[in-house]
Image: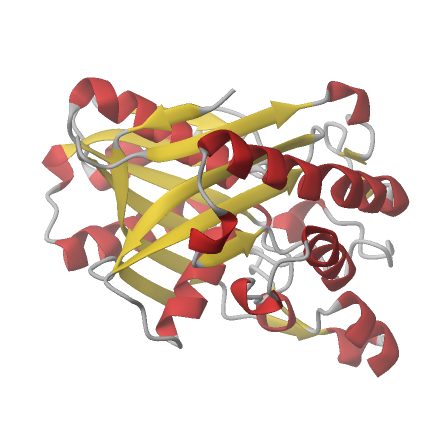
Length: 318
């Protein structure tokens, strides 16, 4: 099923904590680092709060866009690591940002597939309000990682991204979103516990499902794959990314990566990679981009969006 919404991405602000950890400094050799594709990770301090990061990034982005907080109709936060069990971060942001009381504000508990899901949710709401919205995605994954778990510790990084969207009748984002709850134990975190991940199950799922999903999605949209200018995959690890690319048999140059610089930043990884790529590459007036996320659930989804050259991007550290 192809879903659609009439909105466009106006800007993205990525925000990472300043604290940096290198896998080479905690005993991982270069062969392992090269295989997994991750060395540098960013770790939030104990007093850092996700809502404060979201506030800072949202204010910075809206200032650069010359948007008034009074014009924001929708604020959706996608995270698995909220500061408190309740209320949700989006509820707190309504106050912190000074949004209207009738602004639609809520959280979604979703992980690495969260970005395409979030774009669809915000875009669908903007179809009704005809206005502007903020999508905040990301986690402080270090808060749920067992420091003795050598399978997950060197992979995950903390960070968030804020995406500003606006309704535009002539814009057309397309989506394909999927869930298979039979895989719910592959990546799992109990209440008050630590994250556990069945690496082989996740690897097998990603390589079996994601290339097939992407090909079907593109076929169903009737878009020729040769018309896609960039593909932004969730940055899981190098073995998964390269396995997906091999099975797709698309040019590797279409797939930017930020794994070595930032690690796996959960639902922030796609917008963070967009920021990083276009900060370092010339952008044509309009680019057709495929965005694909996958992970906890198991869940996966893709979006085909147009990225305009006036889209504002920035990556900052706090």
